[in-house]
Image (cartoon, rainbow, N blue to C red; front, side, top):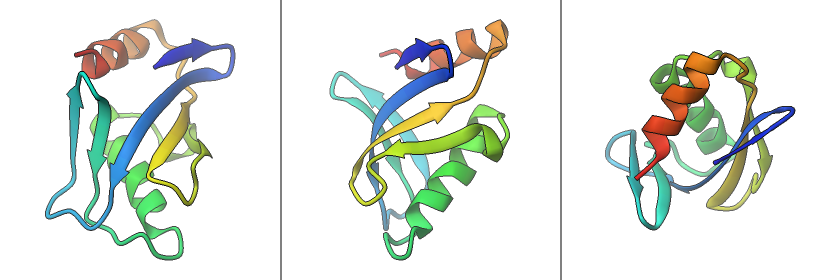
Length: 94
């Protein structure tokens, strides 16, 4: 996770077709399990919807900037509120 002028860049690994949606943070990095299948961008859409709910930020503030068809993804979270940034840093630190 790194802060830029455009927001926060978040590198993660997605596991589609999971039994439930969940976020795990370990020394290996951030992993997000999504129940959606990786077909026609459904997993990316589900990832954005899930993170929007979990992190309490609008879906329109989350973009997949790298890895659209890959399990390794980079997301841009357009968040500038100091409280929200602090919350994200705590959530994604291991």
